[in-house]
Amino acid sequence: MIITVASGKGGTGKTLVSTSLALSLGKDAVFLDCDVEEPNGYIFLKPDITENIKIYLPQPGVDIEKCNFCGKCASACLFNAIAVIKPETGKRNGNVLFFHEMCQSCGACVLVCPQKAIYEKRSEKGEVEKGVTKNGVSFVQGRLKPSEAKSVPLVKAVKKHVNVNKINIIDSSPGTSCPVVQTVKDSDFCLLVTEPTPFGLNDLRLAVEMTRVLAVPVGVVINRFDIGDNSVQEYCLKENLPVLLSIPFKKDIAVAYSKGIPLIESFPEYRKIFKKLFKDISDIIVQGKK
Amino acid sequence: MKKILVISGKGGTGKTFLTASLSYLASDKKIIVDCDVDAANLYLLLHPDIKRSEVFEWGYEAVINQDKCIRCGKCLAICRFEAIKTVHKDDNRGIDRITVDPFSCEGCGVCKYGCPVGAVDLRKKESGKWFISDTKYGPFVFAKLGIAAENSGKLVSKIKQEAYTLAEKELAEYIIIDGPPGIGCPVIASMSGVDLALVVTEPTLSGISDMKRVMEVAEHFQVETKVVVNKYDINLETTEEIRRICYAKGIEVLGQLPFSEKVVQSIVKQVPFTEFSNGSIAKDIAKIWEKIK
Image (cartoon, rainbow over all chains, first blue to last red; front, side):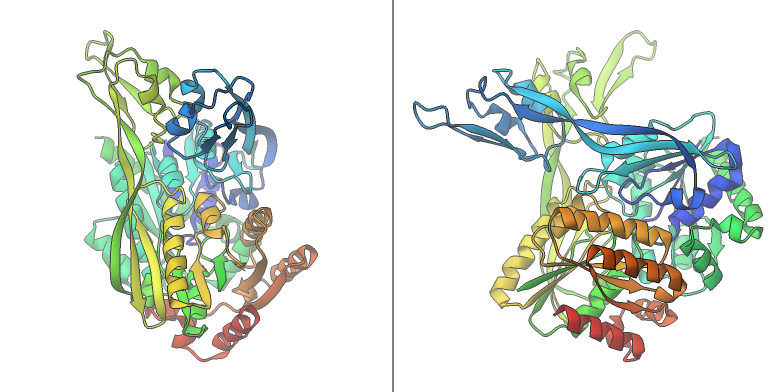
């Protein structure tokens, strides 16, 4: 089973919810941090990291001796990542420039080069770390190397560690575009965490539309439900979205969060609430499959 | 012309609240931009009157022409994005057809280049809309990414370019940009060429972790960085820690703002905070603006 915690808007409490949900399940759970740009689950779960896997992508380069400056690689590259400078007549002063920040490592240039002049070398894009928490939750996180632009390959690398025999809790990055689509895709359920403000509502709407495109069932968590307005509740009612949990604003919750203490540890009464949340999600998944 | 980008790494630290507040305080000659095209919120505070609306398209997706396809599977072997899927026949005897998963397809064209019978077509895939608008705070450029679209930074770069053109025409003194969360493509596209990255952080361990990573990106692209600590009173020790980190890196902390339900109220009322209130927090934001401008 795969349950992904996403949000649209950032800072609504995805990690607060996903870490406590995973901890409430103990050794039955795998926590996968797919917010590879800004992974924070580790702060709350404090896992012992036992494995570090570097993630590399192929990066093209040219053997200029073999190149005849035909320009086929540049025309084939749909990401505009290659420029071919033709040599002056009778000279060999041409060059091929690669703009690595645009390159998607697709291999098109290698495929179309008639001279076999383009080679690929490995370039490090980030890492996947694996470990286990004190109470037995398996832990996986991806970390994009800062200044690297593309997070989707890292998200994919993290999701390779989904364990089909366990309950997989995935923490997503905010937003609704490619890294989030890649994270939510193939989930059995998506829990959307929001807040009752115009920002929270706007971004919840976008996130709901995204889950509909991906055909993933959703439930909503409203965090800090008692500050703000009622528009999120009204929207959920109108759209028939189940609100599975409402968390009040409490300074003590914010303070515990700031110190990296999981909600179910600072407020033990939440252990039961998160167990119920998991049961409600399981029921919805089972009903959907009937 | 000074280009100021408000970023954070972590989401929900108060980027949009601060951008709107600064936009209200800045002199008349400015352009306001929302580069968070994925979950754009600034328009909710600025109430734009849209003057120009354009569709922007980029990127491709592969589509297999089933009449031409000979089911050889070459595309399956050369696609690096696991986007080519095979559908087996009902009786499990061989491949019925080969299709493309649009959510995995990066639109690189490799399958088209490698197909021996020319059965792959590329069609335009990603789209978004961008807008130039008037607001009572000044001209405002923003965009909306299509649902579940790719955010490679192309739409971000497009609206930044439009904003720069407008700024030159209007002889603007400032371009104030609301940035996206994270550190990936959209952030890098937002950051290129700005004069100042204003990092809004919060005194939580997550806030610190994310601030450090976005600072690394700014350092890599050699963009000057300054910091505002929002909700500083949630954890005073952690606020001190942020100040220590910034001091060690030689980064100026421009100010700190307390947590206040008034800020939430201003968002519910959809008014920039410095317009909504003239209390102590608004005065603190005015002091921050004095240090930036």
